Length: 222
Image (cartoon, rainbow, N blue to C red; front, top):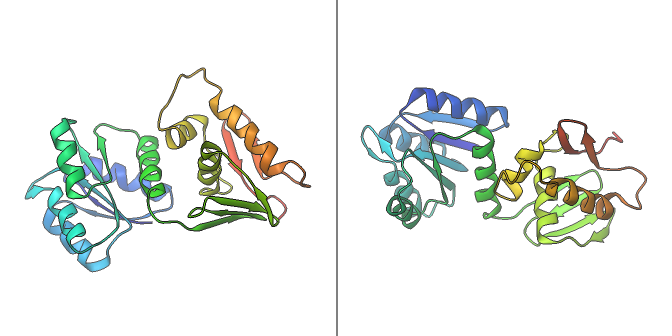
């Protein structure tokens, strides 16, 4: 995705840029409202990460600017405070979510995935597996696979990073929006459900376990 980060604290801005670029996104950083407006007008974005407290004003001004021109880019507001009235104001202005500082890269990535799931649909393919995110229809080699809501969300998340190993913690944060109890086997149980539906009856598996690291969805026949 094309991401614009509007953050005046340079260490945080650098942290965000590095983390998002490692995830494969194209990132531009602006350090105040004026620079953020220039970036939005020059290239637009798929995702705006904007701090509420900037040297030249409230980051919500950029959010309102986007919504006035009917731009459907996803917006996550960054803040050091989590007061209810602040979150309400942000949502009323058109933000999709809030992220309270300090936060980890995995939490940021999970929040981005959550707001993007609420956006438009598309089609994802991994080998002979086809996932239509708009209709939530899944087929493999033309055969329809019926999934529960949670199974679909987990499969879609794995398919968003084909060939990449995703940790159990990251999957919990992205799909269940929680780190959950460290002793839980929720991820293992749902991966087992997916294997029975996605891989059973086919010559080769698409869902792979990387011991001690996590899970990956990958067509290894190529």
